[in-house]
Image 1 (cartoon, one colour):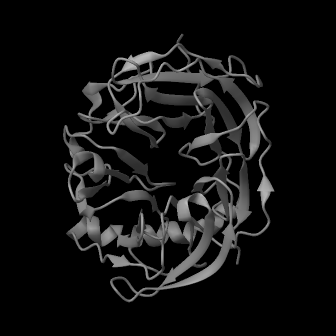
Image 2 (tube, helix red, strand yellow; image 1 turned 90 degrees about the vertical axis):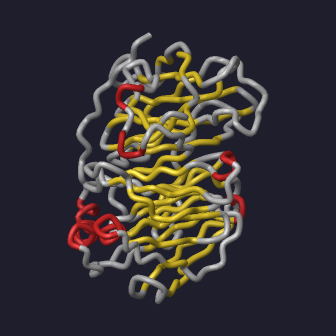
Length: 361
């Protein structure tokens, strides 16, 4: 069943203007900002939420101030919604937004389906939509939010998935406009793709396509408003059916396997990719970054056990491994290979997710 919805242009709230000086800094290479950038980390297996502020010059002279720390239950990931001044925390049992200092929690409306066992969440390119996937022992449901308001839910058909293995394709989600996409392991090998969207504007229950067989999909992302997939033969755009189109392979990354994808926000045309070293059997694997124009993606450094990263509007890429947080300066890195890399001096245990936020002046 073909499902297609075009994305509506996002509204830009006044608070988003506060991020503009940071975007200009990223373009010019300067480090001056009108407000200090803060990072929000989900660590300790998803049970601790932290807000930290890095400061200092590039390279090794970096300090970190811990602004807040909160205990949370069943943390899945953190993302930055439109405006950049709050953080969205997705948990197994619910979703909420918080201020940059982790105060003022505001719960998103709970979907009607129960139980709720959220395991995945993804944003669109404009960061005004959030798609969450609940998986309670194979019973899977989707919920779509726009600007923290619940838009629709969808029950997915029962998954006939293979037994979990070290190389079984993971379950991933992505969102583009009103459309939600799910890739999950398929019995018999590879992945299967499902697409969900409301049949008419205002529908609160989305229609779900039948599963479509696809090659193994390792990750999904929204890059420049288009959905892309990490596959065993490279990074490819999704066709209208949701299946990766091998004719659209990003030559800058080569015809090789990647397991994780991350895209920049706003005007940043940046795309990062990494292969999981635990799956490749190597001690570490290259973390690569592409500016959308160069013939080849640049290698930042080899990384072990990468859990998440965020490409922030201050021009830095923050890479979160299980036990450390590294900062890389993207402008000189892409221009000359001088990433001015630094490890941020803060103790980290079993990290899960990282994002950026701009505190209210």
